Amino acid sequence: MVLVLSLESSNSPLTFFSQKKKKKFYQYCVKSKRNQNPWKECHIQQMETDGISLVRRQSGGGTVYQDLGNTCFTFLSSKENYSTERNFNIITNALKKRFDLNAEKSGRNDLVIDGKKISGSGFKQKIDRALHHGTLLRDVDMDALAKYLNPNKLKLESKGVQSVRSRVVNLKTLVPNISHESMCDAITQEFFETHQQECEIEDLDEDKLRHNASLMKHYKEYQDWDWRFGSTPNFKHHMETRFDWGTMDVHVDSKKD
Image 1 (tube, one colour):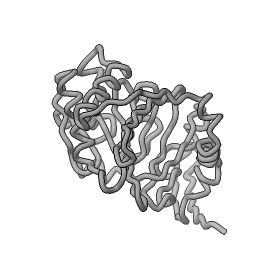
Image 2 (cartoon, helix red, strand yellow):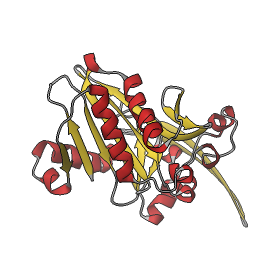
Image 3 (cartoon, helix red, strand yellow):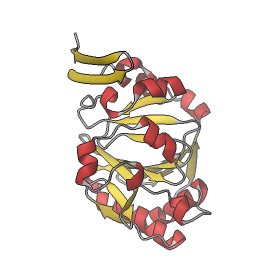
């Protein structure tokens, strides 16, 4: 389900909210599109065993686990009207006014409450347009998150935590009655107040997607193996595992033709 808010002016921002129908695993790439290694960032074999999909996107940011407990937001605007600070304020003000939650920005990408991460963002800019999108951890399966993510241990240690799970918190833990719908409504109202105008909300469903040739073209491209895995840069990988019969030590030197 995708809700679209589009203000009248061509220079005015758009906002999207989405919630996936089934569990997905998102591999976030930086702007070059091809600089993250899915075999390093997540446990591919376990994902394939459990039927979890890998999806790669063009924006920056980290690798996240996505299921029905996660609400995604997107701000799309002209570059001249682009402001990540304003976008973040829309999210934090909505959480404060509707749910009395005091979220604050941490670093370039994250929103935290009492030091616990509730949101991560990615960004991309082109010639005349700019994109800011991210996640809101509402009621994500933390066991699955820990099962499929393979975070950089040095990065975790630099943040003073031992695992991804210990660093994040679900909003439902803080506000038991929070829902995808109530969160979208709160952000929508704050979006209208910030831009001092309102618009009709469009529901972009799968049927509309199938009848839009341009969207379907991108949809199929992002489903393709060549984009999800084949775009991975050359890499070297070392794997070592101990079995009852001995130790297996594998060195992989991967290069694209």
